[in-house]
Image 1 (cartoon, rainbow, N blue to C red):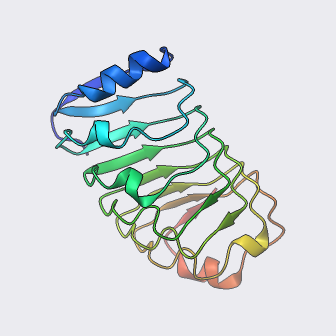
Image 2: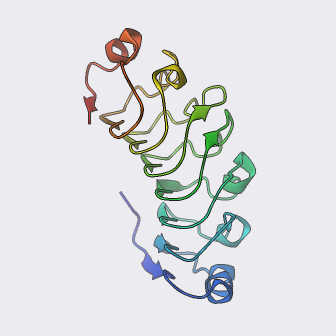
Length: 178
């Protein structure tokens, strides 16, 4: 999945240290780990010089909001892990710059709603994990996952779902629900 590149691990370091490391991120970084750093905002501009397909893990931080601008400079991102942050909602343009994204993990946040269709631009997404959030049956409109034609795995466990819309199930004949 990744072009030849290096792994950069700046997990569990002081905020100033990971900020400095992110500012000088090597262009050939294939896997970037910024886990458990107390990050409150995405370090978007600092990842602009990475110009190969790469994976980014922001797991277990304090990120509350994310916008499409946060991902404007990382179009080659293929795997994004934002699990166990403080996200409450996703807006419709949040992933509009990430057409190459194949795996997205948003589990363990506080997601309770989606504004519009936040997954509309993720036509290459294969795996989506939105488990262990605060999603209700009402939050999962029947059209929310329509663009995800290549989706093979959808994790919804640990939410507040009582049922799934029948249209949702019918749209994903090849998808494994977890």
